[in-house]
Image (cartoon, rainbow, N blue to C red; front, side, top):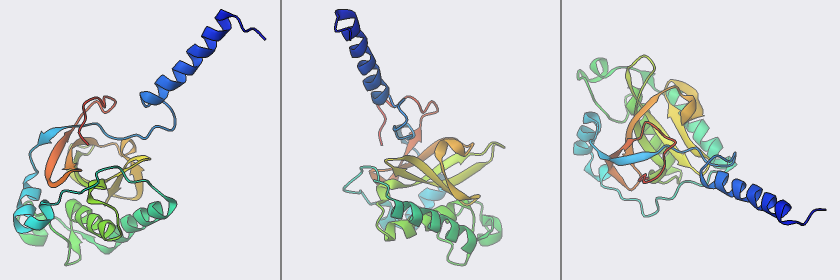
Length: 205
């Protein structure tokens, strides 16, 4: 076995490469989370929702660390996504309320994308998942149409609960362009989502 300087440097170089891969998120075990930018404006529908439900938009979670995902929590999350998708009849706001943009709980059994997301968020929070990890999110679909989903932050990455899919998907597998989402530290604040989500330096989660 060669214990010379060249072999030692090679071994040290390989070890350093592994450390750098882990630090930059290129290792396979790295969680795939969105990069979050600065505070931005609320969607108008959420602004009106907060006017009608001020207590729901004044919550500052004491712990904003990401959810440590267990098998039981994953089972819960996927079940809630499917159950809500099946329980609510898709109906646009004009037909449902006679208005263009209404964010509310679908208590009448009908609703559109943000209403599904609000209900999923409430049900999962009631089961013990912090609101810091249940974030209303605005995206753009491949056809250019605006859409709302629920983002679940976890140590396994960010996952999307969507009324258009019964499968809870990693955010990169949705095909959506991510625009903005609720801040994890305040339910009444929103933050922008950085288009180049490989750049995590200076992000505010």
